[in-house]
Amino acid sequence: MKIIPKEIDFRKRNLVFVDIETTGLEVERHEIIEIGAIIVSGKNLKALSEYCKKIIPEHIETADKEALRLNGYSEEKWKDAILLKDALIKLNRLAKNGMFTGWNITFDWTFLEKAFTRFKIKPLFDYHLIDAMSIAYAKLYDKKLLKRLGLRHVVKFYKMKGIRHRAMEDSQATYQIFKRLMLKNE
Image (cartoon, rainbow, N blue to C red; front, side, top):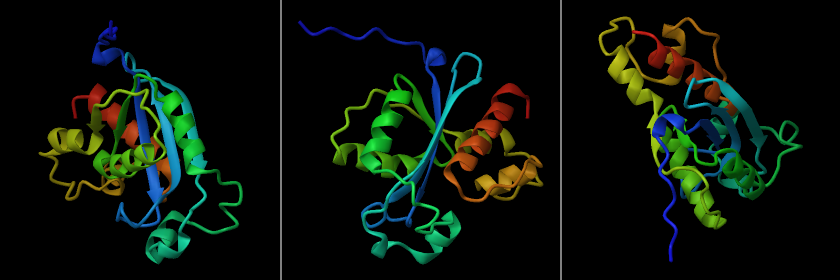
């Protein structure tokens, strides 16, 4: 007899604000080199925990030089990096029953899904994805001063501290913008 899991009200699921940095934009060619995540209560949007790890690149020779420059990659800065599989196992545990949330989450999820599949890691998290950029589109559509929907543009629009293309900083910026969009009448 198969046990059917009890359904969880989506409002009670934690949100997993995730951002990755990669060696380029092509999922079949490039790889994840950093993962940042903030686990947030779905009930009250309070941060519960954070996780950030640099990942050892397996094929740095296929990296896009501009991507590495933007991400601040160097062998020295990545000397304490860990294996992707180990980072994913930890992220999977932290994300249990949660919903991945991010800025243009499709990009991050494409790389993450490929990696979870590659290492045969059974997801403990919910399959729904929340795209903060789509919420910003709906809520900020009438704001004439905002011309583009990139994370850096919305950060500037809100007069928030600038970000530098790092996984944890981008996760934090997305989380802060999400709270503003959800809790205020923007």
